[in-house]
Amino acid sequence: MIRSATPIYTDYADRYGEVEFLGQSYALSAQVRPTHREFAGSISRAAEGEQCTVEYAAPAVDKDGEDYLVCWRFNVVKGAEPDADTHNWGDAYTVVPA
Image (cartoon, rainbow, N blue to C red; front, side):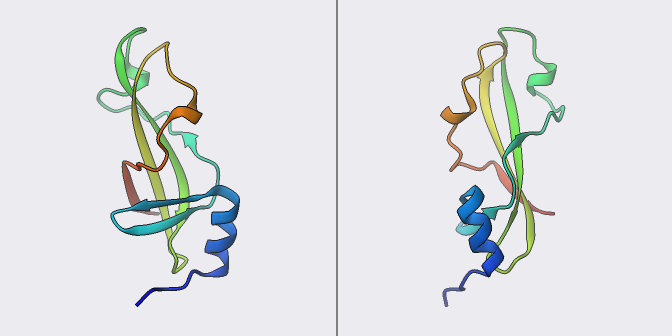
């Protein structure tokens, strides 16, 4: 059975976009932002010119209106990071309940 989306899901999807992860759809409920979290290999721990990972996240809801956090990770070279628009935003790293 296909679930219909709640009005809030549709509103958020129209405003901020949708992401699919492991067969589940999520509507972002705010703009995607860098997390600035420190973890092994993160950009905050890398030296200039070093390969590292930059992490972004955004709150989201599923079609039932449940809250989640969608995260993306991209490999970059510190100091030569590409414009965020060039990242593959359709490829989320993980989605966790909020």
